[in-house]
Image 1 (cartoon, helix red, strand yellow):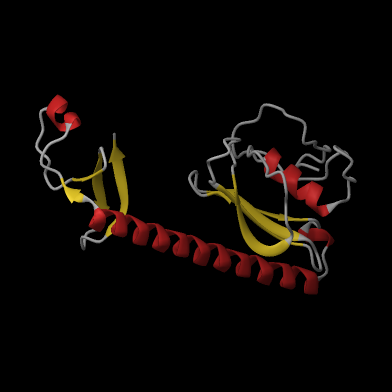
Image 2: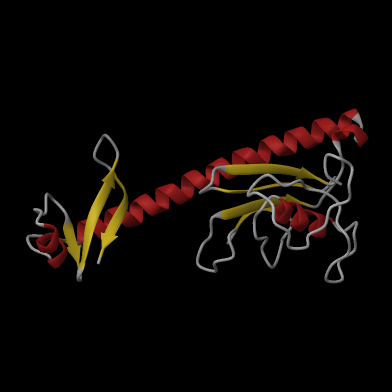
Length: 193
């Protein structure tokens, strides 16, 4: 149910991105209405994201295409099915995060509320660690590509634009521009064909 108490549904409807409401949904695709995975999928959909085909309730972070494009993995979720089913999902590119729980805060006992809050904090820590790890791996890969690339002295793109290379490198026929932090560490690369 959404904040007005109206039963919501995962049918494709036009909503502003990231302004939807999670809730119990009608049975669609054979999933029963009280199935936590179905309700979690509906909450993702109602938030304006394209939910993943498969949702795994193992407490680990999973990445998925939140915009329907198969190569994009901006969406993420963590779902716990043990105890009171709860999870969190979002889109890292949009900076969007939403918590979800199968039970409302009001219907939980004090002990359940405490356990849910602790689990939510743990999911937040896990997400932050995973994102930091992904950034570190991306920076390492970018640095390795940068070190393997050759210094650029001439490129068709630079000639067309009438600009000097100013420290860019070349990898095959592509220009590489290093994205660095203030200390000079390479975090990412921009590629120009």
